[in-house]
Length: 246
Image: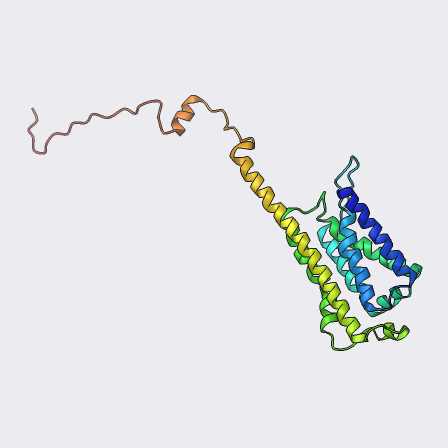
């Protein structure tokens, strides 16, 4: 199943890149938002699902902090007006830009996809922290009161008003990012809880317990509170005060 999903993710990435490079997609910022979201939030994590299967396990991954930086640069940079205009033209430049975005996304997801560099609650926290800079383009596009893609919209007629195009693209980015990262966080969190429950059950019976070190018998007697040698009791008889001595 994982292998099929992984190949499905690679097929999706190829279709998206070829379609964007053809230049036949609608001339909208919304189109670019869908393209980048499919690559970063759907195709990239799916491509890594089969890393832990088979005899040759591909264990490459990028450290967490550089991975977040790469993902942030890719997602924010792909929504900058000059980059959107460049990708919208199609051709080899579009292929290079989208392949670079895909590689940055693979670096981000490689940290938590099996065999993962981070696991459990730490991996869940990594996803939450990584979602903050990724969400920035969506928030800006939704809240900006004017069109920042004037050159892009002037290059070709747009099927919808420019400001609506920009706002809708922000909503698309926001939905893709939040839904995908929520699913990833939920899976990682539930996996961590399940592992903790398994460890607790294993500690009660299934897991091998540590044997206490072998100690001499007299040491065990002392530790258990039963001394091996009774302490002598002093028999001291006290004479009453004022008694005459013979």
